Length: 101
View 1: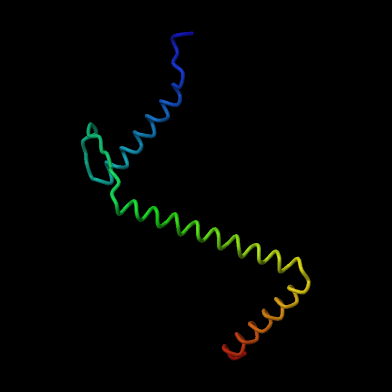
View 2: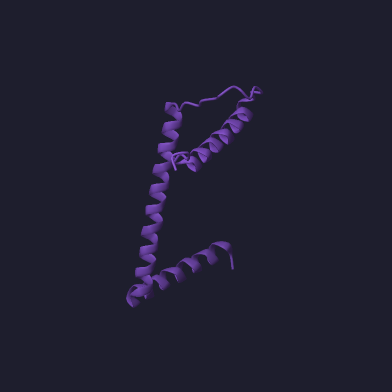
């Protein structure tokens, strides 16, 4: 039982993933030598772009959640539903007037 190491599959998957990553980095940086190991270090600009993208995703998800909640509330309560339908009818009429129908 002592012959086999635990985590052998995990290590093999990690090695395979690293090999795939190195191949893509060799293509990206146009390096032909397969014995060269490329290490990309993150810099401040990449960090700021990733943080900004994460913040935008979080804000968008929150906005979608809030709009979905407002839509559910609008459909559940009859008084709000009637007002909402009147607003939609008014918007549709204004769009038709602008287009010329």
